[in-house]
Length: 86
Length: 229
Image (cartoon, rainbow over all chains, first blue to last red):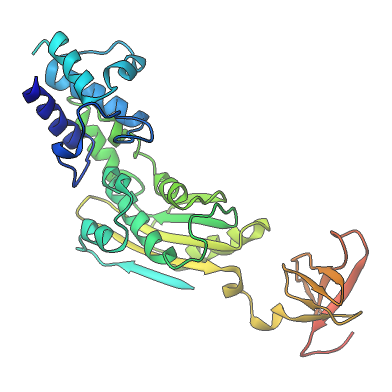
């Protein structure tokens, strides 16, 4: 699981152009959205949805599902591990 | 008036790190927005009361290519997974939005696509922007970005007084001799004077009006130089 978490952190940094940020800068359980944590926005949610489909074959039914899946990198990793098709 | 020019070949990331450094959203912007954002930062970074919301500064952005580079970049992703992050920049006016959000500007914003770099047309639009009685400063940028590698950016920060001849700022009231500067309120000798902002020259005279608003009769005032009623 730790490998998947690190992999996700790298993909998030790449997909969202978080230049200068390293996986160590992202806490496993830190919120991805809102004022705390990474402070991502609604466009970033869409980009993360694309990331899941492209890399893991996971299609979220609605962007609203992203709220649950993208709570933190750790939650994201659990979801990917349980639902990935590739 | 302040001016800025970002020469072709400049590393935008280096420029950001040298002059800004505290706005990570910069890295998510497209090239046109990075250029406009940096040009604006260089123009306004010395402003007093920076980041205090204001409605009196307009943002005008001019280009020849509009969002062409982003349109192409986005179209390329449509063959695989269309990128939402690229899609949001496929409009020429996103530059004005990024600048307004960063600086808390709540006034006029406009984007113009011109056939070529045309200083006269740009100046015309700057002058027009001042006609709304709210705008007292215009941040105007030429940001042309036909591709991510080929671009040019220059900018001008123009205040209203930059466009007015100095002698039009000072006129004296027919009664009491209170100062009148075109838009400011003055309280001299316990009496408040309100100038309506319209300085129509009629035979050397300028109209301005007294009291609260425009309701207490119109008075003529004229340039101190002329010193005639």
